Image 1 (cartoon, rainbow, N blue to C red):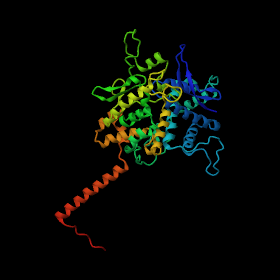
Image 2: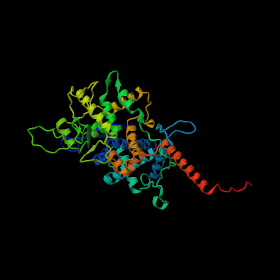
Image 3: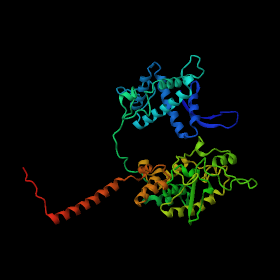
Length: 464
């Protein structure tokens, strides 16, 4: 009934279009959702749009199987409850509605509800004339349903969303639903890649026969040795890597913002006067491409933001410094491979061993290559084990902490917007906790011995 698709949206008489997710219904595209995404396209990612699309689809599916429910409060309340409980009968294990929802975690359910809250808030304000549900309403059946839901939500904001405050009173909330709260627990063992296996991964894992995968090694060095997120290296141009003037044996790597980063200085025709340009403009004019954050196919690579070192780029801070030296040496080996291929794009990491040769190397391909490299050296692959690409960023953060680097510097090296963001990367492991307790016990034993030498044993009360 509902299908998530990719849509190209023309908003004026030019040929410029915006590519965004869309929801296809039996009566056509859900237009209110298109309007919402166009409204937020300047500040929200494609991944966020995909998640919102999923949440709206869930709500419309629920409306479809509950057409007789007219009470708005009960409709929203029951929808939220089914997110938590699922839709299968406990007695028979059968779901007669066909929804076949399994129970969702409180975190996932709250996220779905928050997406709906934001959407209905916006829809009730922007499409107020449509949400009065005039009998001559021109939109499709599902457009009408979403507009009506937004109208009911706006009329009595007591159903969903951020307003599920855990400390809200009955006077302030009315019928407002509250999300379930789980007991607080430690986040568990930080999933960092094991430091003692890193060199094996580089020089044995990323090797088949006598052939090294220099591309895979370089990306992994950026994650493990400089703490970048796994998607960020996929925005690097060849010009973004060069010998560091402060240490010519070490690579200086600048990963520029996909849109606002400065275009390479040598990118324009020599006959044109020099001028400043950002990377979005450069990609469009030279290659007919959008930044990889805006591509809705395998070439997509995200950009989470965070603190930049300059306008607008993030610099690699190598720790330990030898990793920067390894990177520069291997980069030269890799460039010899890249030079064999024509490229219809400026990105550094390309297909080398399979067609289309010279095309953009993708995040999916790297994840598969990284998993294969782990298995070659006998490591199981799993997020909880730290053996996925993100485990390298955790390893970088923990290495900085063990070295005694102060929090403000860790924030800078990991490019966090907030100093609190590093907590998940630098929290104590179970091993750290055990070592701390053993050291404290030794200190306590020393204190006890000193006390006994000075004052002697304490008199104990007689047993009853």
